[in-house]
Amino acid sequence: MSAQVHVPSLLARAGTASALTLALGTTMLAPGIVNDAEAATHSTKALSIAASKKGSPYKYGAAGPRRFDCSGLTMYSFKRVGKKLPRTAQQQYNKTRHITSSQRKRGDLVFFHSGRSVYHVGIYAGGGRIWHSPKSGSVVRLERIWSRSVWYGRVR
Image (cartoon, rainbow, N blue to C red; front, side, top):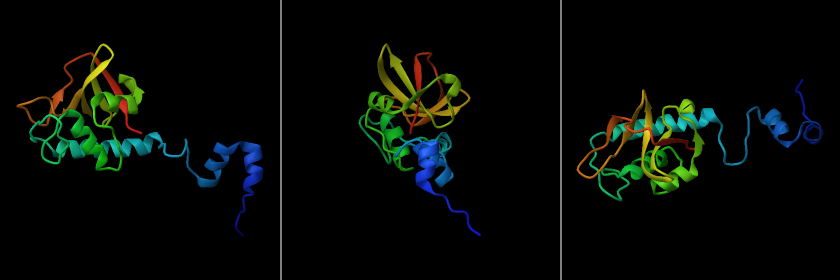
């Protein structure tokens, strides 16, 4: 015997979001929004993609696949896992869900700022380190976070 659920009565008793949770068996935040576990999967895959670009030369304005600037590396890495980020570090910060340093996880974005302006971005690798494309004359590499003037963001 199969159990049948009368959705209109569920909506009336539990509310739309709860009924969706019951009917679908997952937590649905809103259309287009993913839960933390799904975001973590995308983020760790993006982290692996960024790490695979180790040694790729820095080039201002480049977004891969062979040369990168800082935001080009993050944009490229997330695009490869189906997540769209804007082009600049500041725009990427504006688009992410802002989190504290104690909430950061591997694959979250690390934004370096001066005052209210973001000037650099990398992907958190754990242990206080990031994968990033630092500056002209350098290459994509793993490096310790060198400043306290950082903010963290999670790609949704």
